[in-house]
Structure formats: C-alpha cells, structure tokens
Amino acid sequence: MNTKSSRTERAFGFRDKFGYMLGDAGCNFSFSLISAFMFIFYTQYIGVTLAHYSLIILLTKIWDGINDPIVGAIADRLNPKSGDKFRPWIFWGSFPLAFASCLIFLNVPNAAYWIKIAVCIGGYMIWDIAYTIVNVPYGSLNATITADTVERSQLSTWRSIGAMLAALPMAVILPLFVYRDVTLENGETVSQFQGGRMFTIALVTGIMALVCFQILYFLVTERIKHADNDGEKFNWFKMIAGFFTNRTMMAVSLTALVSILFVNSIQTTGALVYQMYYGDGSLSSLAVIAFLPMFLLLPFVKGMVKRFGKKVLCSWPMLVGAAMSLLLWVIRDVPLIVWIVCQGLAALSTGFYMLLGWALVTDGIDSMELQTGRREEGSAYATYSMLRKLGQGLGQAMVPALIAITIPGLDMNNELTWSSAYGLQIKNMSMVLCLIGFALSFVLMQFVFDVDKKRELELPRLLGREEMVPDVSLDNATEGISRRDD
View 1 (tube, rainbow, N blue to C red):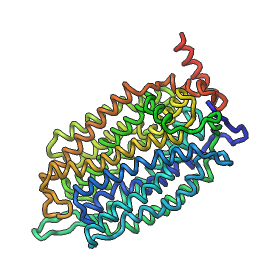
View 2: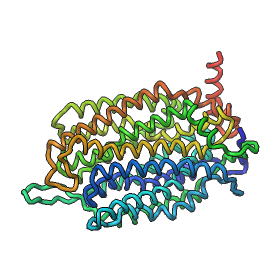
View 3: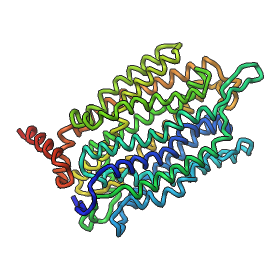
View 4: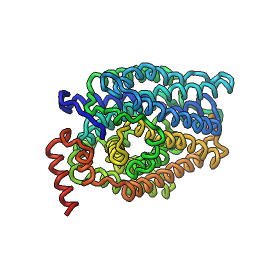
C-alpha cells in the first residue's frame, strides 16, 4: 500500500496525544468563537438582515467547501524532504489564522449597509482559507501518527478533549460578558448582545490558538511515511471516485453532515432559546452541559472501544438524544431545570460519537486505501471536511432562513419585536431539527457504516502494518479473523 514507517522514530506516547489535543484546542479557539457568536454579532449588533445573512453564509460556504480539497490535494502532491506531510502546514498556517478571526468581528455597526455586507463576506472568506490551511492538515495528521486502531481512538478522544478545553471557556465565560439587560421604551427588559467587545475577544483567542499550534508542531511525530504511490501521479478524479464509492467513508461523511446540519444547529438556536424563550442570553453559559457528559465518558472510552467497537458506541446512544428532543418539543412550557437535564442527556447520547468521530475518519481513510491501493489521506480528509463544511454552511444558513420564513414579524435588530410566542416557536424549531439529526445519525451509523469491531482489528494486517500495532491488538485481530473465517 505504498506505506513506509521509520523504525528509528520514538514510540507513540503521551507527547503525541497531548500535542494532538492542543491542535484541536487551537482550532476551536477560533472556530467555536465564530460558530457561537458570528450569527448574533451580524444580525443583532451590526444589523444585517436574516435573509441577507443566510444568503451570505450559503455562498461563502461554497468557497469554504472548494478550498478544502485544494489544500488536501496540494498536501498529497508535495513530498517534503523531511518526510513530514502535514506538520509544516500547521506551523506556518497558524500565524495568519491567529489574527484572521479579528477581521470577522470588526466594529462597524454605524457603517453603510454595503460596507457591513463587505466586511461580513471578506472577513469570513479570509478567515476560512487561513483556517483550512491549518485544519485540513491537522485532521489528516491522525492517520500518520499511528496505525493502531486503539491508539487512533485515543488520539480522537484527546482531540475532543482539546476541543472542549477551548470551547468551554467561550461557552461558559463569554456569555457573561457579551450580554447585558437593557430596558426598552415600552418598559420591557431584554437581554442585549454587546458586539463591541468581540474584536478584543477574537484577538486574545487568536493568540491562544497560535501558542497551541506551535506546541503541537514540536511534540507530535509523523510515523507513517508514504512513498509516491509507485510513481503514479496524484489524480484528483480517481481520489473522488474512490471516496464516493467507499461505503465506510460515505457513512462517516453523511453522519457528520446530518449531525452538523441538524443536531449542531442547537449551537445557534440554543442561544436564542435562552435569550428569547427564557429571557436571559447570559444563560447560554449553561451550554457547559453539552460538555460535562463527555468528561464523564473519558475514563471508559478505551475499554468500551475494545469491548464493543466504535460502531456500537456511535449508533445506539443516539436514540436517547432523539427521545429527549421529542420530549422538549411536545412540552409547551419547559422549566429551565428540565431543559438543562434533557439537554445534558442528549449531549451524553452523542458523547462517544464526539470522542471517536475523528477515529471513524481514519477508518474511512484506511478503507479507501484498501479499496484503491493508494494512500491519499490529505485529499480524503479534505473531501470529508468539505462535506462537513457544506453541513455547517447549510445549517448556519438554514436557521436564519427558517426564522425569517416562519416568524416574519421577528426583527433580530429590534428588541421591540421580540415576544414569548416567538421564543416558543424558536424552541420548538430547535428541537425538531435535533430530532431529525439524532434519528438520521442512528440509521447511518447502524445500517450503513460497515467497520464493526472485527473489521477494525483486521485493517492493519490487510494494509501491511502489523509491525506498527501493539501485540495485544494483533492477537485480538487474529482471533477475530479466525472466528470470521470459521
């Protein structure tokens, strides 16, 4: 499979896991900030209409999707002398990314409307290319650090921890600073977004991201070195054909797509539920409930993967999330404590998927290599990332579009139009979207994803990487293969 490994490299260990963790912390110091606040910043503070914002996001995400495969293809085409395929991209790309998010949060609420639109489009597109230059190589890096399925699951888990370490302070602390109670002319008190503080926040989080990426560069080792596919030139069309005809990769990609499109819409609608349904935007800090269950699962991930395999852990729990979404949808007046508990249970149902999702991608990359005979993890991950970004774009465009269509009387930039009835509609819409996402994710992981526990363990042998897998994994793999052959 055109794969080489260096036997002089140090063994996989804590340095790799800690460094890889910091990589997703760096990504999320930038990405989570924009996911959580860009929509509210432009619609409530800058004054861009819901319809225009929805269209802007939809169009810019097309650009977002296009540049991912470009970066992945370039990474696969280049053969650096060091043999490291992805670390140099992360090192150099982290510098422009550190400051790119500031462009999105330029303080222009009093500018002409066309300037507001230009800042929104231009700032997002510049940030996006900077983010892609770092994120696509970072996601591809997992497949070059180790060939062992358990170690890859550990990397996926540590990556998720890194994401939580960055997202938690923004989810818990920032809402306390960016919302303020304001009394309107009619005597009603509303929770108003303070967008003028976002530029400074973006600058600070950008610098924190830069530090994380630089530490990753010096800690992580790429062990799986790749020859040039027996002299065959990289062919993007062959890679695309292999991607879209591979059942494993399609299952992983479609699950990510529907999860982002529907389940993750709660990142946008949830803030509005707290702001308009419960009347206090600072309650968004309770989003911590989406992370706490994953911390509870951390000690059990390695053992559960060995016992059940990733497929079981990433499918059946989704039904709990579907049930919680259905319950919160049908109840009209949901007490805050009930909302918090049900959201916590829904988050718990996605816990293993969130912790292991990136390891599923490496299963898809390995499955593609086995099918095509070519190792193209950069382009494969970039195409997967493109589909994720399509989900993000459609999701971020869908929520404002649905609000504009179903609640035409709501003006996000005019608090006088806000009402409890509109808050109820937003709450119901958010739960319907989550219900759809949980149900579709279960179906895709249970009935389309084809890498069960036995298949996980036999992939290294089929790809000729037995020497890179600990003996215990090989023993289990051999046992699984023997049982299957019998």
